[in-house]
Every structure is written in structure tokens, then in C-alpha cells.
Image (spheres, rainbow, N blue to C red):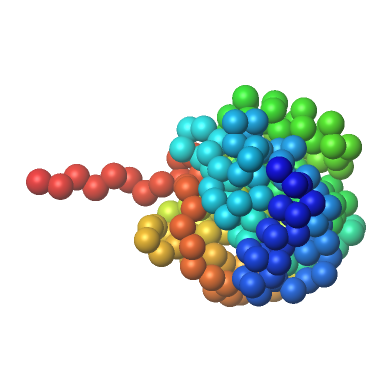
Length: 218
């Protein structure tokens, strides 16, 4: 595989046409080796417009979705980020390139361990990887964050997550059910107020445990 051409085509044919115009985000996707984070058996698909399985019904977000997430959050160099769902570690690396520090939670110990190894090998050190259920966030010692990113969808957005945003902080989440889920950007505008913006529609796998209760039909 011609890696450089594959990256270029990903940016020009998938990401840019999806209204991603932020030069810093586009540059990141040109530089960051997505193939290093993809499970080995799917490495040939690292730059394709396809969902790459990670096990347990989980999958990587599409490159264009990852890019829209980064563009929406508008991260600053001194900001802290909470990522719910480490997955492959690729989005963790992109977030870390744009901010001061990333705390990333992964419910699967095996996935967290693999991501830790790849991130270290790629020289990404401003991250803390935690194992646990991050659907309610990670209020370590009452910590709050400038940005929160959910890498899988949720049936409903839990208010507990919103309280872990700094005033002025932003949260990206994909909410709802197939066939039309909604990507949302929630901004905390004051101590007790949040504004929500609808960004686009898509369908991604739910975070583990975040699917709605099964309906029984008779």
C-alpha cells in the first residue's frame, strides 16, 4: 500500500468534502499514521471509508467523523480532554496533538493495553489511559475538562457528563438510534446552562452498555 497516497486520498476524497476545512485538522490526518493504530488484520483498510472492527461489537469511527469531531471541539493547546472509549488509540493521538492532556477511558482492558503500546511507540505521552466504564465520565477528584469526546454512540446523553465540563467547555456525542443518529456539540455556557448544536447525522456502534433496553415483541 502506498501510505502517502492513501493518506492524501483520505483527506481529499473523504474528509475535506465533509465540510472539514480546518487546516490544523487536515494537516493532522496527513501526518498521523492511522495504519499504526488499526488492528493488524485490517491494516490494508486503514485509510478507507469503512468501519474497522475492534471486537465486542465496537469499531473505529470513520475518518470523516473523527475529523468533524476534532473540528467541532476547537481544542486549545492548554486544554484538558476526556475521551470516552479509547478504542484503537488513533483518535486519542489526534486529540493529544491538539491539547495539553488527554484522559482516555476504555472499558476493555485488552483494548486499553494495546492502545497504550501503540501510543507509546508513536511517542504520544501526554495521555492517561484508564480502564473502566466512562459513560458517566471520569470525575477523578472532582476533575472537570475543557472538552469531552464520546467515540461511540449513546441512547441518551447522561447529565452527569455535562457537569464535568468547564464553563466554556464542549462535548461531542452521537446520540440516538439507527437508522439516524445525531452528532451533537454541547457547550457549557454557564454554571447551570448548556447549549446544544446539531452537527450531522450518522450511525455508529453504541458504547458498551449504552444501547437502549431491548423491546420485547409479542
